[in-house]
Image 1 (cartoon, rainbow, N blue to C red):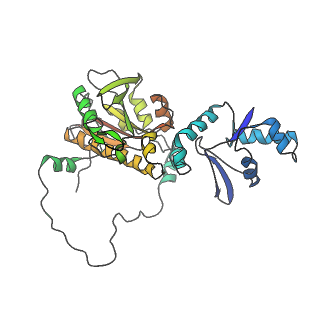
Image 2 (cartoon, rainbow, N blue to C red):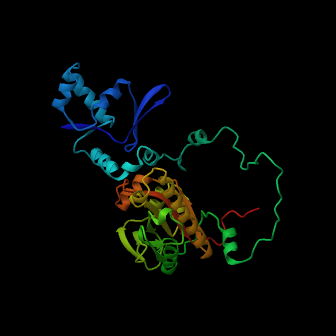
Image 3 (cartoon, helix red, strand yellow):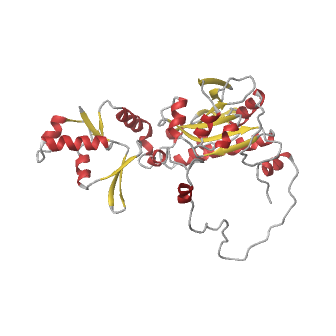
Length: 357
């Protein structure tokens, strides 16, 4: 057996203790500063014989116990293990964006309060301080009053004003034509532009940093006329759906969205993932991770406006069960990872979205 230090490892001070965190495995443990010196030796794969020959000041029994502890806490990885395979994939796919890219993995699978939480549990997460001001007045000169023109009555502006996040839906199924229009207008390729440096690039209705379009979309079909329930991958160029998982239920939809029960009544969910390599190939600096997030946000707003214009009831959420969704999509969560989920249904007869004052 050989051992190597985890790449997905961060070390920081926390509450006056030295904390060692494997952010890929979501595991954190406190340790003595001597642990840093021990881990430093494992920058490459080390056999047991090499370890014994290097740490001659310690007994074989002590070294074996230490190795067991470091492996158990996922600071050292055993060659051939699933954790080592994930770590190697991280090294291969994310090298240009590390260590800053650790934020992505460290924030996956965050625990969320659920409807089943006790009053005590819910009270524990409610802020006890006053909220910050929602508006900021800049210091300096006198404010300049702008003219208040009447709101335009054209269809685009009416769509902007009508957009709301819905949490109640009628039992009516989504028509296949409605699903097709949503996918085509939001994620579909509308044309191409030739670039001298980067070749033929796709044009879509939402902007994308460097025209890299890292976001993929999978449709969780619950109630779409003429389409069996399941999870489908959408091909934006060919405008086709391919079944990747035949299991799709309302309970599963709620579970995906951190037990938000109202989304179980949606007709379809749109699971947005990112293939980071597309953006990373052009932008080597980790700041480009922000660009991927912006891309997902652009698509989410385009989706909401498109659905609103079609008379549908859209919503979006970042409260996700990341690893569960990635497992059901059959993706590894490293080279491709879920970012954002939107959904849609038909509105109820009584509008449930909040009206502006």
